[in-house]
Image 1 (spheres, helix red, strand yellow):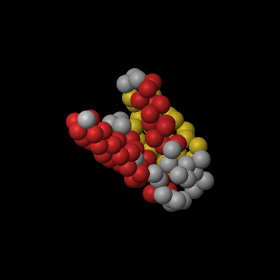
Image 2: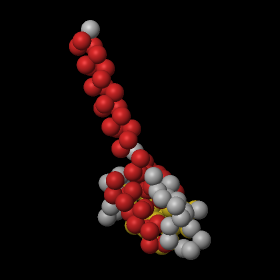
Image 3: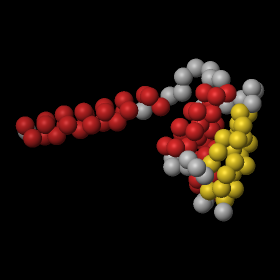
Image 4: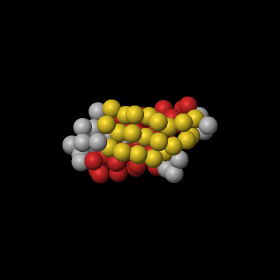
Length: 99
């Protein structure tokens, strides 16, 4: 009984830790072009796409253009998703090639 309670308490602490760690991944309010680019680059780095996918441009109306070459279609989609989820991005032009 005591061992079960300890295991349950430990499981709750671990799950709470992982749940709270996602709070800091939410993008804050409206961002300017530089902040949008920095946020996208941070997301790309988290997915290991730094150096192979580049934020080519960010326009004032929220259009982001990505360039580069990745190894597979999954990485190309990750790059798109990394840009699209940033607050202030209205559309993504995904010029990333698979090769």
